[in-house]
Length: 379
Image (cartoon, rainbow, N blue to C red):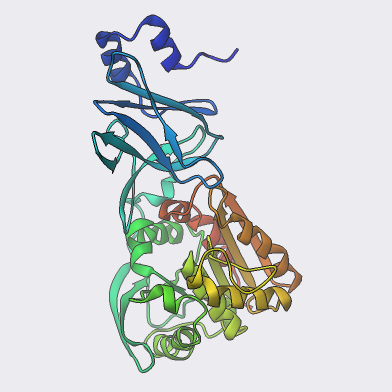
């Protein structure tokens, strides 16, 4: 028997002030009951709208005010294991603003601020994203590199806790490295996965770009910088294994395009690719994608790859959220990658285009590309 919604029970009992007070005190918000989630707001407003980032659903959903009260509510269907970021758009008089849900303490942060987070039934925050007191912490060292083609660049180098110059290590280069460190807790994730022997001791170069939308969109100069300038400099400074299967590129969104197109321009240099929610825009007719001129070079690249799929790596891990507009492009890419003979793993999640989605896929992606020392042998 399906239990009645808690909001319906309140309305049936009569939403007096004391009952509303108790309702707010006794529940966590949004209220998740099976595949339904009830959003609740308490306060004065002329209109209240839920703004979420689930592609394919109406992005603006109006909450209903309980007559003669300051209580607002809206119930939506939310599949199990979903994770949804949202805000409220509150209207008072002629003014409106977007706010985080004051009844929900769960927040997700990104370069643009913070969003409230709905955690659907069955979703759990991965415990390996939290600091483990038993895991020896690796070291983050500043990286500064003067490139003759793209100018001065800054970032960080991650060295595993047991780093020794007498040993050799695999290398992973991460696009938008500062954001990965800040918004996915990637240093903590690396510490934990290495401690658990799920990945080997690994050196990670976290790189950034001050003009990422231009450089990351299938730019030959960027590919040259990463492969012919940064990689040799890291090889000079650090004890790295000099084999493609011990070298990886990674990125999310436009950063995934940068990783993919760099590997395509330098086939079999980068033996491991981790591509998250890639902005892999293409066209079936014409050369202009509906996403706008910013994607023109991406469209050209992906169209060329679709016409002539070629192997550029050995293993490719791709992840994307089913609530993203990019899910179609990412799904379409997988069979093309597989036709080239590359090993491909594709993971979908009930999440959107955001950093915590990408965080939640790190363990599966990293451990598949770079299996831990108990089972990984460099050939």
